[in-house]
Image (cartoon, rainbow, N blue to C red):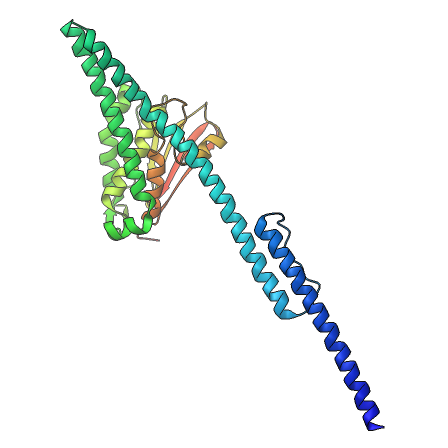
Amino acid sequence: MFWIIASAVLAVIVIILAVKIFLLRKGYDELTSDIKDQAKGDTSIPVVLTTTDKHARRAAVILNDEFRTLREEKVRYENGNKRISSAIAGISHDLRTPLTAINSYLDIMDEEQDEKVRKEYLSRIKNRTRQLSSLTQELFDYSLVCDKEEYIITNGEPEDIDLKKILEESVLSFYEILKSKGIEPGIEIPDGEVMVRCHEKHAVRIFENVISNAVKYAKDDLHIKLEKDGTATFSNTAPEMTAVRAGKLFDRYYTVEEGSSSTGLGLSIARELMAINGGEALAEYKNGELIITLRFNSLDS
């Protein structure tokens, strides 16, 4: 009797194990099939298994996470390729324009006998050469700040600086240019020092790039405000601006005006330098005003 019962129990166990093995094999077959589809990009539906085996299900969870990351990387890669192609086209145009003008002036000068006219063309060539130099410098500077880790290693850690002093000097250096455009900047600066942690040369470059952008595009006004916590805002009336365009201002190679002589890297460089120094740069459009906000790494935070 005992052997009969034992045999029956053993048979049940064998059947249960066979079913479990069958379901497990089925689960891994499903997993294999889904992996192939996911790898080929034929589907983005998460891997779902019928098996209850915790090891197989855990493998499915990990694979789903990895495939999701892979899809996100693929999208970033494809978008990056599109941006690079667009950037190369834009840069080629920016560099080709002054070069074409220089070649044209040189051709004309070969045939021009009037020394006064030749001097005028020579002056135009110099202007175009300076423009070309400025464009290439912007490209070079941006290539440097893009590699943040290497840039930090090369330049060392940020230092403690008085942001108020640097902002005052930066505004003063642009004051005559702003006045020549009919812009009298309104400035709000707190009493005493505004201490932040940032490379001094970076803070200078950041303010130069932001104010330079205002010089190009501000029409009638510019308001600058610095707060004790190291937040600096630059705002000006911009009736032709939109919230979407404002959101793109810090994008690489984006320019407000098509066909301008700018690479569109000035504000991008400012944002990268802010990030390197632990701060952030934002642009928004509110009530007909473009507002650029720079939040430096305050020593009080």
